[in-house]
Length: 282
Image 1 (spheres, helix red, strand yellow):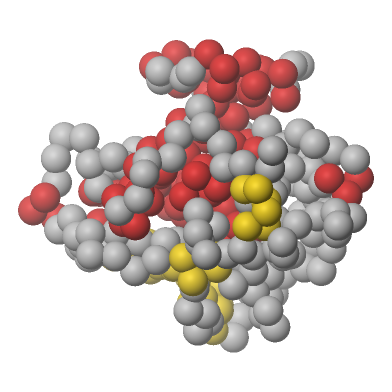
Image 2 (spheres, rainbow, N blue to C red):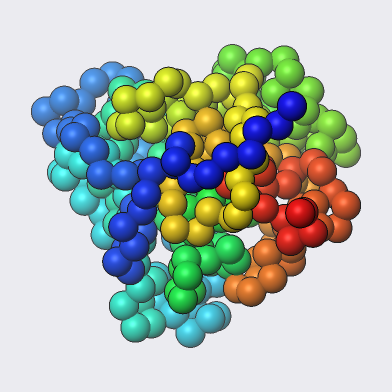
């Protein structure tokens, strides 16, 4: 039986115009903490460069200017986004890349989350144009990762990943006629698994898994809070399995536009009920 819960399991978000990937935490990975498992500075920059090449023109078409603050030397394990006039600003910290659980794909997923605050549409923070945390997560996997990975050899890439069979099968069923999309879906799921470990360390909670799910049901859509860690991993997975074309934008007011939506009778690839309440649900 599904459990209806309040937002007590989610971290409160102090909304002051700047959206952080995760709550403030004490994790710190300076340059001196670099290990062979860490994302290298060249990868840090190449991930950003690749995403910028796609999204800078799209933001310019909106009359904006994409500004990336690359703080490689900063040990902070986080990222953030905010708007200053026409500047769409994204700040990426080197500590997030140097976390021992980080991968180039998980770092890309964080970057995509920050783009999601700017471009993810509804649900937004109250009285703001910036997408909420849950929506930024949904944008990251349903739009951004699919866009920035589209031209890579993704089928070869996943051969080197230990993708659980259930996850691979789900992605293949979501994209039965497109092996590349199915492979991107699997890459995104594994990136979410890595991020789940980072989120858990930051919050000192249980480690979420791509083989589990948050079965809670919110009484209202969370627009001012972080969803729980497992809920966020679920959101990444669901977004990765949404078949709506990644070029179809989300709408700033109507959350069903550009999305897989329960409001339209869809139940695959939708925003999970652990943070999102569909409009037609009592």
